[in-house]
Each structure stands twice: as C-alpha cells, then as structure tokens.
Length: 319
Image 1 (spheres, rainbow, N blue to C red):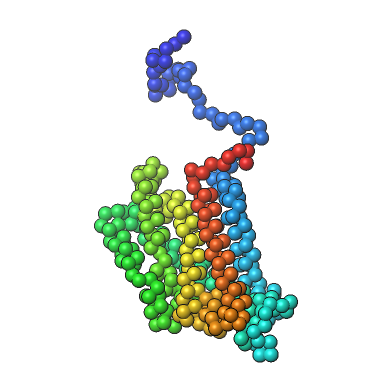
Image 2: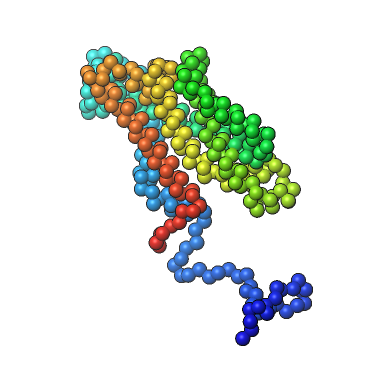
C-alpha cells in the first residue's frame, strides 16, 4: 500500500501521467427524490416557515387591495355627508359607524389607509435608496470620505426628531409630498449605518478582489457586485422603516401637522374624533386598530424576511 507521504502535487506538464490519487472534478450525483434549490427558493421556503410573517403578508395584501378598491367596496365617498345620520354606531349600512358629519367611517378608514400606506412605502423606498448610497460610498472608500459621511449621519441622528418634523411640516404646509420629503430626510441614517457595516466586511472578499483585478471601475464594483449582496439587510430595514413612517405620519396628523383634512389619514381621523372618545368610541377604535394591525404585520414581515435572507439559516427535515 502506498504511503500518503509519498504523494506529490501534480505537475503542470501536459504529458505527465496524472497520479491516481487526484479525484476528477465531476458533478456529484443527486439522490433520487432530492431537490436542489436556488438561493431564492431557499429564502422563500425559510420565509414560509415563519407563520406570523405569512399571515402578516396576507393581511397586508388584503388591506392594500381594500384601500385601492375602496371605490368598488364602498358605496359612499370619503367626503359624502349625511347630517341626518350623524354619530351612528356600526350597522349593516355603515360597518364602522358614522362620524360627526354623517360620513361613513369604514370608507374614511380605507381612504386613510391608502394615504398612510403610500407615505410608509414611499418614505421607506426613498430613505432606503439615499441610505444605501451613502453607506455604500462610506464603507467602500473608507478614510476621510467615511469620516465625513458618518459625521453627517451622526449630526442628523442628534437632531431632536419630532420637534424638527413639526416645525418643518408647519412651515411647508403639510401636503402629502411635504410629509414624504420631511420623513425621508430623517429616515435614511439607519440604512446608511447598516450598509456601511456590510460593505466594510465585504470589500476584502475574493469576488471584490476578482472584479477589481479584472479592471472593473469602483462604481461598477459598488453597484453591480457589492450592493446586490447587501440587499438582505436593506430589505429588512426597509420593512421596519415602513412601520416607523406610518407611526410618525399618524403622530404628525394627530397633532395637526400632517396631511391636512379633508384628505383622511389614520392620524387625522384620530385627531378629529378626540372629543368623541366616550360618546362614539368606534371613531377612535377603528383608525387606532388599523394603525396597530398594520404596524404589527409590517414588523412580523420584517422578522420573517430577516430569517429568510439570513444565509446561516438552514432548512430542517425534508422540507
């Protein structure tokens, strides 16, 4: 029997005989019935195992469709008044009751959800894009560029958030575009910090060195090689930003500095029904429950995405 110590590395001579201990690179056979999954398929299967995330996704889809199709679902307009039917409780004709002007509360809650969800999604996308670019540049280049960008980030984080939001919303007028712009200015910092950390740990990886040695420009390395590999944390943080933006917009509207009536949002619906808390509590319950359910579902969805996009997670059993 040959001793393993006698084994020598293969020569580069093409005429040399390859030693019998070299195992040729062949595709490993797949056992019958065993499936090979792609990265996306594995992520989807991990996500499906998170029951709360799946239920939350279904609820959010139903809620989003209801806000878009409210004109089909409800026979009332959100500003349609009926002074002979004011402050009536939930009934077959008005599922969520009516407010102090006889307007259908169910219709107004759905229209308010359309505005609140639009604000949350738009703020998450815009702030996520800005934060990803700032964090990518800071993490990739490092040095003085990193120091400047991170000090600017720290400066924004040190600003008293709610006070500045109220002042800015009051100065700009409180339109939908103004609220989205103001919230986007103050929501990009967590994304920047997360992406910077990912880039710092990724820029010395082999695939980055290979792209650099092949002559790829810095911008191509950042946006075509590194940023796609950082999408997991970005997506997870974007879902949390949706919930935070909805809560912040609702708080601003409740204080009277958000989207102004007659456009309904969940926040100004709560603000307009404060004096009816004991007389007509359904005017407070339904907008409040809409905010609570939406934020909980978004947070559960973020938890599910975090587990699904974690490469260290493994599927157990024969799933």
